[in-house]
Image (cartoon, rainbow, N blue to C red):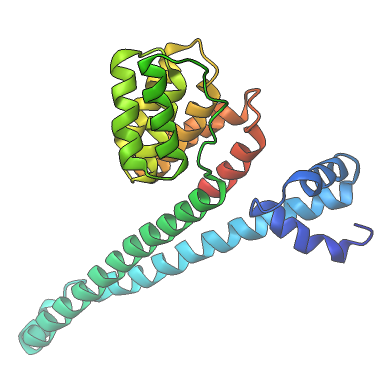
Length: 253
């Protein structure tokens, strides 16, 4: 980072959340001591915001032009232009509808693609801790459930974990893997329920994991406001995931 012209690429990656590890640490350290780099970052953020605003303004301008075409024809010309005006208004209204649908659909599709990108980049299947030792029947059931989970047979794992939890609800890791299994099967409401049990229990080793995963459930179910509030909470806390949560927030807002 010796010359200004070299900043652009790494700043783009930073704003896209593609920096991590040593690269991210190096850039954040450089930002603290390099006013030139800080100014370049500020400028790039303003450019990005301006581009987004221009897209909105362009659409508004197009809709305004169409709206004008819908204004009533003066009475002195009404007899002559009645039929023409009728079809003009119908055609213009159709164009407005097309623009509106395209804007809404495009906006939704764009967000959906962005959320999918976030999920695919930051979601990882939970890797369980060491299996409890024990020779009781429930320990055997737990090991069987864990084996199915590790073999990615999530439907079978769900059935077995639920049998374990019917007997011993205190097994929070079983709750966690139940939630993750549901996520792997695209059952995000059910997954959220399992993670909420862990969070509400408030005295176990798996709360941080559950809080992380439930944020992805909000993303997958289009609960954007909840997702933003949730990852903001993680980003402002002491979680090991706080830096990843910050990068997700930059992409989701």
